[in-house]
Image 1 (spheres, rainbow, N blue to C red):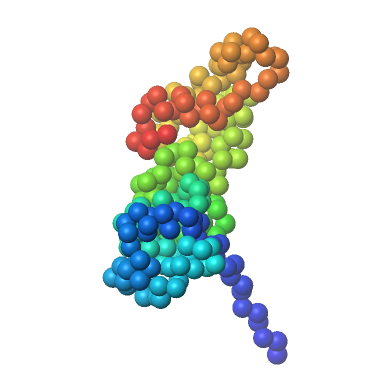
Image 2: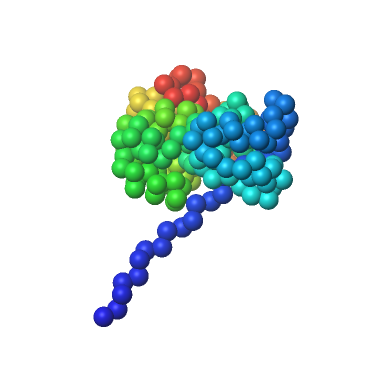
Length: 231
């Protein structure tokens, strides 16, 4: 009888960690690696001072719990220890110093579903859950769409809105961008009109076939309505 293979789980990507930032924060506080290790122990992570030096030298990378404890020991926002701005769901979660369980609970999705969203970069929550995700991770609308892998879908829907009638795309768009449909119904006719009257885009100096920057323009128009989740 053949033994069934257990499903393989992809290894988590390394924490987006900046050795230079960690070293600079420690030096700025005048702390030794031993003192940083002691500070991390107070936050539940025990390790040797050599680990702190290995992170600062780029020889090792901290895990999630270590990364969060290090930020707390260095008295700095976790985002300041990253090697770039937060982009993915996991990046934003770590920047808020949250575990996956906390985000799943706050958004009302199961823990396996949230883990899958981080793993794949695609979020399938309903509008209420998406709104809760933005609140839990402190995301602006532009960051939310980027982190949940909805950028291409947004661009595609907006192109369909300006190419024909925008009304049929109102509800699908509201599932992508958690704002009231009334706000979208204010923005979409403007996009549609501007697409068909190129002078609105300053296109007099451009070829008639120039493609308007739909997504940036969409965000600009939506920001003027002051949505509950900032653009």
